[in-house]
Image 1 (cartoon, helix red, strand yellow):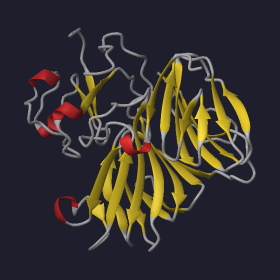
Image 2 (image 1 turned 90 degrees about the vertical axis):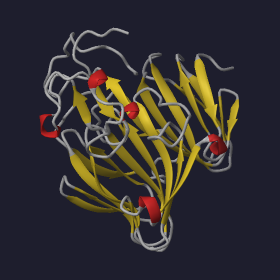
Image 3 (image 1 turned 90 degrees about the horizontal axis):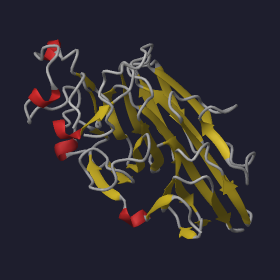
Amino acid sequence: MADAGPKRLMCLGCGFLYDEKLGLPEHGIAPGTRWADLPDDWVCPDCGTPKSRFEMVAIPYAGETPDPGVAVAERL
Amino acid sequence: MMTGSYFVLRASERGYDRLASTGPNASYVAGHPDAFITRHSSFNFHEYQSGRAGFGKIRVFGDEVFSRPGCGYNMHPHHNFLIAAFILKGSLTHINTMGRIDVLGPGDYYLASFGSGGKHCELNLETEDMNAIYLWVVPDRLMLPPTYARSHFDADATRNRITTLIGNHQGALPIPQDLKVSRLVSDRAQTRIYLPTSPAHGVYTFVLEGKIGCDGATLERRDSIGIWDADRFTIETAAEAADVLFVETIM
Protein backbone atom coordinates (compact mmCIF):
# COMPACT_ATOMS: atom_id res chain seq x y z
CA MET A 1 0.00 0.00 0.00
CA ALA A 2 1.38 3.37 -1.00
CA ASP A 3 1.30 5.54 2.08
CA ALA A 4 2.60 8.81 0.68
CA GLY A 5 0.61 12.01 0.53
CA PRO A 6 -2.48 13.10 2.40
CA LYS A 7 -5.49 10.91 1.76
CA ARG A 8 -9.08 11.90 1.14
CA LEU A 9 -11.88 9.57 2.16
CA MET A 10 -15.56 9.87 1.40
CA CYS A 11 -18.38 8.49 3.51
CA LEU A 12 -20.45 6.04 1.47
CA GLY A 13 -23.47 6.78 3.62
CA CYS A 14 -23.72 10.49 2.86
CA GLY A 15 -20.67 11.81 0.98
CA PHE A 16 -19.00 13.51 3.96
CA LEU A 17 -15.30 14.07 3.23
CA TYR A 18 -12.36 13.42 5.54
CA ASP A 19 -9.19 15.06 4.26
CA GLU A 20 -6.06 14.13 6.23
CA LYS A 21 -4.51 17.49 5.38
CA LEU A 22 -7.42 19.37 6.95
CA GLY A 23 -8.45 17.04 9.78
CA LEU A 24 -11.69 18.01 11.48
CA PRO A 25 -10.72 20.68 14.03
CA GLU A 26 -14.39 21.31 14.83
CA HIS A 27 -14.59 17.67 15.92
CA GLY A 28 -11.28 17.72 17.80
CA ILE A 29 -9.20 16.12 15.03
CA ALA A 30 -6.09 18.15 14.22
CA PRO A 31 -5.02 18.93 10.64
CA GLY A 32 -2.62 16.25 9.41
CA THR A 33 -4.22 13.44 11.39
CA ARG A 34 -3.89 10.27 9.40
CA TRP A 35 -6.93 8.18 8.67
CA ALA A 36 -5.13 5.22 10.20
CA ASP A 37 -4.82 7.15 13.46
CA LEU A 38 -8.55 7.75 13.84
CA PRO A 39 -10.02 5.22 16.27
CA ASP A 40 -11.65 2.13 14.77
CA ASP A 41 -14.95 3.09 16.36
CA TRP A 42 -14.91 6.56 14.79
CA VAL A 43 -18.07 7.23 12.76
CA CYS A 44 -19.15 9.83 10.22
CA PRO A 45 -20.06 12.96 12.21
CA ASP A 46 -22.96 13.66 9.83
CA CYS A 47 -24.61 10.27 9.44
CA GLY A 48 -23.02 7.75 11.80
CA THR A 49 -21.62 5.49 9.08
CA PRO A 50 -18.72 3.44 10.46
CA LYS A 51 -15.12 4.19 9.50
CA SER A 52 -14.93 0.97 7.48
CA ARG A 53 -17.56 2.32 5.08
CA PHE A 54 -15.46 5.22 3.85
CA GLU A 55 -13.84 5.02 0.44
CA MET A 56 -10.48 6.54 -0.42
CA VAL A 57 -10.91 8.97 -3.30
CA ALA A 58 -8.38 10.65 -5.57
CA ILE A 59 -10.68 13.46 -6.68
CA PRO A 60 -9.59 17.12 -6.93
CA TYR A 61 -11.51 19.86 -5.17
CA ALA A 62 -13.58 22.19 -7.32
CA GLY A 63 -11.14 24.65 -8.89
CA GLU A 64 -8.11 22.63 -7.84
CA THR A 65 -5.49 21.20 -10.16
CA PRO A 66 -5.18 17.51 -9.35
CA ASP A 67 -2.51 17.15 -6.67
CA PRO A 68 0.05 14.49 -7.55
CA GLY A 69 0.66 14.10 -3.81
CA VAL A 70 -2.85 12.75 -3.26
CA ALA A 71 -2.67 8.99 -3.03
CA VAL A 72 -4.09 7.46 -6.18
CA ALA A 73 -6.05 4.53 -4.87
CA GLU A 74 -9.58 3.70 -5.83
CA ARG A 75 -10.50 1.57 -2.84
CA LEU A 76 -9.43 0.92 0.69
CA MET B 1 -21.75 -13.49 -28.13
CA MET B 2 -20.56 -11.53 -25.14
CA THR B 3 -17.41 -9.52 -25.64
CA GLY B 4 -15.53 -7.82 -22.82
CA SER B 5 -16.42 -8.48 -19.21
CA TYR B 6 -19.83 -8.62 -17.60
CA PHE B 7 -21.95 -9.63 -14.65
CA VAL B 8 -25.66 -10.42 -14.58
CA LEU B 9 -27.61 -9.47 -11.47
CA ARG B 10 -31.06 -11.02 -11.24
CA ALA B 11 -33.86 -9.07 -9.58
CA SER B 12 -34.03 -11.56 -6.72
CA GLU B 13 -30.26 -11.41 -6.09
CA ARG B 14 -30.30 -7.74 -5.13
CA GLY B 15 -29.90 -6.56 -1.57
CA TYR B 16 -33.22 -6.12 0.19
CA ASP B 17 -34.25 -3.93 3.11
CA ARG B 18 -37.58 -3.12 4.65
CA LEU B 19 -37.32 0.02 6.74
CA ALA B 20 -40.21 0.75 9.06
CA SER B 21 -41.09 4.27 10.22
CA THR B 22 -41.21 3.01 13.78
CA GLY B 23 -38.51 1.40 15.90
CA PRO B 24 -34.79 1.91 15.27
CA ASN B 25 -35.30 3.89 12.04
CA ALA B 26 -38.07 6.14 13.36
CA SER B 27 -36.05 9.35 12.96
CA TYR B 28 -34.69 8.38 9.54
CA VAL B 29 -37.86 7.03 7.92
CA ALA B 30 -40.77 9.44 7.55
CA GLY B 31 -44.45 8.56 7.81
CA HIS B 32 -46.36 7.30 10.78
CA PRO B 33 -47.34 4.92 12.18
CA ASP B 34 -47.34 2.16 9.56
CA ALA B 35 -45.24 3.56 6.72
CA PHE B 36 -42.34 1.55 5.34
CA ILE B 37 -39.69 1.73 2.65
CA THR B 38 -38.73 -1.31 0.63
CA ARG B 39 -35.39 -1.03 -1.07
CA HIS B 40 -33.74 -3.38 -3.55
CA SER B 41 -30.07 -2.44 -3.90
CA SER B 42 -27.98 -3.46 -6.90
CA PHE B 43 -24.77 -2.46 -5.13
CA ASN B 44 -23.37 -2.52 -1.66
CA PHE B 45 -25.55 0.19 -0.18
CA HIS B 46 -24.21 1.43 3.11
CA GLU B 47 -23.81 -1.57 5.43
CA TYR B 48 -26.84 -3.50 4.29
CA GLN B 49 -25.57 -5.83 1.64
CA SER B 50 -22.51 -7.86 0.76
CA GLY B 51 -22.65 -7.62 -3.03
CA ARG B 52 -20.67 -5.54 -5.52
CA ALA B 53 -19.37 -2.29 -4.08
CA GLY B 54 -20.34 -0.32 -7.16
CA PHE B 55 -19.78 -0.06 -10.89
CA GLY B 56 -17.50 2.62 -12.29
CA LYS B 57 -18.62 5.84 -10.59
CA ILE B 58 -21.95 4.35 -9.43
CA ARG B 59 -22.19 3.56 -5.72
CA VAL B 60 -25.93 3.14 -5.24
CA PHE B 61 -28.65 1.90 -7.57
CA GLY B 62 -31.71 1.53 -5.39
CA ASP B 63 -35.15 0.40 -6.51
CA GLU B 64 -37.26 1.88 -3.74
CA VAL B 65 -40.93 1.88 -2.83
CA PHE B 66 -42.38 4.29 -0.26
CA SER B 67 -45.60 2.84 1.13
CA ARG B 68 -48.33 4.58 3.13
CA PRO B 69 -48.88 8.33 3.42
CA GLY B 70 -45.94 10.41 4.55
CA CYS B 71 -43.44 7.66 3.92
CA GLY B 72 -39.92 8.56 2.86
CA TYR B 73 -36.67 9.91 4.23
CA ASN B 74 -36.72 12.77 6.70
CA MET B 75 -34.42 15.74 6.06
CA HIS B 76 -30.83 14.47 6.20
CA PRO B 77 -27.41 15.75 5.12
CA HIS B 78 -25.19 14.96 2.16
CA HIS B 79 -21.95 16.15 0.65
CA ASN B 80 -20.36 15.48 -2.73
CA PHE B 81 -22.61 12.69 -3.98
CA LEU B 82 -24.55 13.22 -7.18
CA ILE B 83 -27.99 11.79 -6.45
CA ALA B 84 -30.64 11.23 -9.10
CA ALA B 85 -34.17 9.91 -8.71
CA PHE B 86 -36.25 8.55 -11.58
CA ILE B 87 -39.91 8.34 -10.63
CA LEU B 88 -41.65 5.27 -12.05
CA LYS B 89 -44.94 5.26 -10.15
CA GLY B 90 -46.83 7.49 -7.76
CA SER B 91 -45.80 10.91 -6.53
CA LEU B 92 -42.57 12.06 -4.87
CA THR B 93 -42.33 15.28 -2.91
CA HIS B 94 -38.70 16.35 -2.79
CA ILE B 95 -37.50 19.17 -0.52
CA ASN B 96 -33.91 20.38 -0.50
CA THR B 97 -31.70 23.09 0.94
CA MET B 98 -30.85 24.32 -2.55
CA GLY B 99 -34.22 25.98 -2.20
CA ARG B 100 -36.65 23.67 -3.89
CA ILE B 101 -39.86 21.94 -3.03
CA ASP B 102 -40.76 19.76 -5.98
CA VAL B 103 -43.50 17.28 -6.67
CA LEU B 104 -42.44 14.70 -9.25
CA GLY B 105 -44.53 12.08 -11.00
CA PRO B 106 -43.92 9.18 -13.38
CA GLY B 107 -41.34 10.10 -16.05
CA ASP B 108 -39.97 12.97 -13.97
CA TYR B 109 -36.45 12.82 -12.67
CA TYR B 110 -34.08 15.06 -10.75
CA LEU B 111 -30.35 15.36 -10.28
CA ALA B 112 -28.98 16.87 -7.08
CA SER B 113 -25.26 17.57 -6.71
CA PHE B 114 -24.64 17.98 -2.99
CA GLY B 115 -21.07 19.24 -3.32
CA SER B 116 -20.09 21.40 -0.37
CA GLY B 117 -23.18 20.31 1.56
CA GLY B 118 -26.94 20.22 1.57
CA LYS B 119 -29.91 18.36 2.94
CA HIS B 120 -32.91 16.75 1.37
CA CYS B 121 -36.15 15.10 2.28
CA GLU B 122 -37.99 12.58 0.11
CA LEU B 123 -41.68 11.99 0.78
CA ASN B 124 -44.66 10.15 -0.61
CA LEU B 125 -47.63 12.21 0.57
CA GLU B 126 -50.21 10.14 -1.29
CA THR B 127 -51.94 6.88 -0.47
CA GLU B 128 -50.62 5.15 -3.60
CA ASP B 129 -47.14 3.61 -3.40
CA MET B 130 -44.27 5.65 -4.86
CA ASN B 131 -41.60 3.72 -6.79
CA ALA B 132 -38.38 5.39 -7.87
CA ILE B 133 -34.86 4.43 -8.87
CA TYR B 134 -32.26 6.23 -6.77
CA LEU B 135 -28.81 6.54 -8.34
CA TRP B 136 -25.77 7.76 -6.39
CA VAL B 137 -22.64 8.74 -8.28
CA VAL B 138 -19.19 9.84 -7.12
CA PRO B 139 -18.45 13.33 -8.54
CA ASP B 140 -15.38 14.31 -10.58
CA ARG B 141 -14.67 17.21 -8.19
CA LEU B 142 -15.14 17.60 -4.45
CA MET B 143 -17.08 20.34 -2.69
CA LEU B 144 -18.76 21.79 -5.76
CA PRO B 145 -21.45 24.44 -5.21
CA PRO B 146 -24.65 22.44 -4.57
CA THR B 147 -27.12 22.31 -7.46
CA TYR B 148 -30.50 20.79 -8.23
CA ALA B 149 -32.33 20.34 -11.52
CA ARG B 150 -35.31 18.36 -12.70
CA SER B 151 -36.55 17.17 -16.06
CA HIS B 152 -39.03 14.82 -17.66
CA PHE B 153 -38.71 11.71 -19.82
CA ASP B 154 -41.46 11.62 -22.44
CA ALA B 155 -41.92 7.95 -23.31
CA ASP B 156 -44.37 8.66 -26.14
CA ALA B 157 -42.17 11.21 -27.91
CA THR B 158 -39.05 9.04 -27.67
CA ARG B 159 -40.56 5.59 -28.18
CA ASN B 160 -38.12 3.06 -29.63
CA ARG B 161 -35.19 5.46 -29.28
CA ILE B 162 -32.48 5.37 -26.64
CA THR B 163 -32.78 8.82 -25.09
CA THR B 164 -30.20 10.52 -22.87
CA LEU B 165 -31.64 11.84 -19.61
CA ILE B 166 -28.47 12.90 -17.83
CA GLY B 167 -25.08 13.61 -19.38
CA ASN B 168 -23.27 15.76 -21.87
CA HIS B 169 -26.03 15.73 -24.45
CA GLN B 170 -28.52 18.25 -25.77
CA GLY B 171 -31.71 18.19 -23.75
CA ALA B 172 -30.14 16.15 -20.94
CA LEU B 173 -29.29 17.35 -17.44
CA PRO B 174 -25.53 18.03 -17.20
CA ILE B 175 -23.57 16.12 -14.56
CA PRO B 176 -20.05 16.71 -13.20
CA GLN B 177 -18.83 13.21 -14.02
CA ASP B 178 -17.99 11.13 -17.09
CA LEU B 179 -21.34 9.37 -16.90
CA LYS B 180 -24.64 9.38 -18.73
CA VAL B 181 -28.06 7.93 -18.06
CA SER B 182 -30.31 6.88 -20.94
CA ARG B 183 -33.69 5.23 -21.21
CA LEU B 184 -35.42 3.18 -23.86
CA VAL B 185 -39.14 2.49 -24.02
CA SER B 186 -39.72 -0.02 -26.78
CA ASP B 187 -42.75 -1.71 -28.30
CA ARG B 188 -41.02 -3.06 -31.39
CA ALA B 189 -38.94 -6.15 -32.14
CA GLN B 190 -35.52 -4.75 -32.90
CA THR B 191 -31.84 -5.42 -32.35
CA ARG B 192 -29.85 -2.35 -31.45
CA ILE B 193 -26.14 -1.98 -31.06
CA TYR B 194 -25.10 0.06 -28.04
CA LEU B 195 -21.75 1.74 -28.58
CA PRO B 196 -20.19 2.92 -25.32
CA THR B 197 -18.32 6.23 -25.56
CA SER B 198 -15.08 4.23 -25.32
CA PRO B 199 -13.97 0.78 -24.19
CA ALA B 200 -12.95 2.47 -20.92
CA HIS B 201 -16.67 3.08 -20.25
CA GLY B 202 -18.91 0.43 -18.76
CA VAL B 203 -22.69 0.27 -19.02
CA TYR B 204 -25.08 -0.85 -16.31
CA THR B 205 -28.33 -1.88 -18.01
CA PHE B 206 -31.42 -2.30 -15.82
CA VAL B 207 -34.78 -3.59 -17.05
CA LEU B 208 -37.54 -1.47 -15.51
CA GLU B 209 -40.35 -3.35 -17.26
CA GLY B 210 -40.65 -6.17 -19.78
CA LYS B 211 -37.93 -8.40 -21.13
CA ILE B 212 -34.87 -7.83 -23.31
CA GLY B 213 -31.90 -9.73 -24.67
CA CYS B 214 -28.50 -8.27 -24.06
CA ASP B 215 -25.62 -9.91 -25.97
CA GLY B 216 -27.46 -13.22 -25.67
CA ALA B 217 -28.42 -12.92 -21.99
CA THR B 218 -32.16 -12.76 -21.30
CA LEU B 219 -33.08 -10.09 -18.79
CA GLU B 220 -36.50 -9.91 -17.21
CA ARG B 221 -38.15 -7.22 -15.11
CA ARG B 222 -35.66 -5.62 -12.68
CA ASP B 223 -32.80 -7.87 -13.85
CA SER B 224 -29.63 -6.05 -14.81
CA ILE B 225 -26.27 -6.50 -16.48
CA GLY B 226 -22.99 -4.63 -16.17
CA ILE B 227 -20.74 -4.73 -19.24
CA TRP B 228 -17.23 -3.26 -19.48
CA ASP B 229 -14.08 -3.57 -21.58
CA ALA B 230 -16.41 -3.83 -24.57
CA ASP B 231 -16.62 -1.60 -27.63
CA ARG B 232 -20.25 -2.58 -28.28
CA PHE B 233 -23.09 -4.80 -27.18
CA THR B 234 -26.55 -5.62 -28.50
CA ILE B 235 -29.98 -4.92 -27.06
CA GLU B 236 -32.77 -7.09 -28.44
CA THR B 237 -36.36 -6.09 -27.84
CA ALA B 238 -39.60 -7.86 -28.76
CA ALA B 239 -42.99 -6.49 -29.74
CA GLU B 240 -44.03 -6.57 -26.10
CA ALA B 241 -43.37 -3.36 -24.19
CA ALA B 242 -39.99 -2.98 -22.54
CA ASP B 243 -38.56 -0.12 -20.50
CA VAL B 244 -34.81 -0.04 -19.92
CA LEU B 245 -32.45 2.27 -18.05
CA PHE B 246 -28.77 2.52 -19.04
CA VAL B 247 -26.09 4.07 -16.85
CA GLU B 248 -22.83 4.48 -18.76
CA THR B 249 -19.83 5.35 -16.62
CA ILE B 250 -16.12 5.72 -16.97
CA MET B 251 -14.63 2.73 -15.20
